[in-house]
Amino acid sequence: MNFKIDENLPVEFVEILKSSGYEAKTVFEQGLNGEVDSAVINKCLEENFILLTLDLDFADIKHYPPYKYPGIIVIRPKYQDKLHLLDILKSVIPNLKREKIKGRLWIVEENKIRIRDN
Image (cartoon, helix red, strand yellow):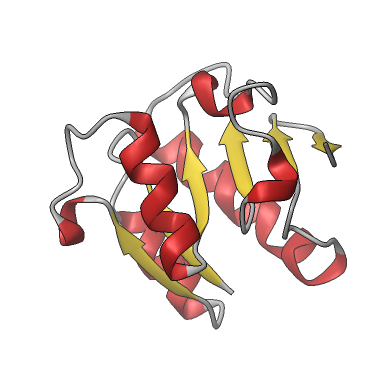
């Protein structure tokens, strides 16, 4: 699986995902920082990358129907400090092997993951 890390998440997400056997790139690496949401998600679609973000706009299934994309993971933390976000990602990694992501929207909170198919 390939992951695109949005600009609102720590760049350390890349190393955590890579150390777990996944490919990961930041939007900065591709010059997508500051781009509109549609440009970011279209690049994910073009490259078959799952988007990891804090941006709640991507949780709007009317604008971003999950079935159209390789996967969208929106993190909804109570706190957005770096260490807390890194801990949330680490808690999600075991689920990546168990649950399908393609064509789905994952809403990740500290203690649960909600999954939408459409």
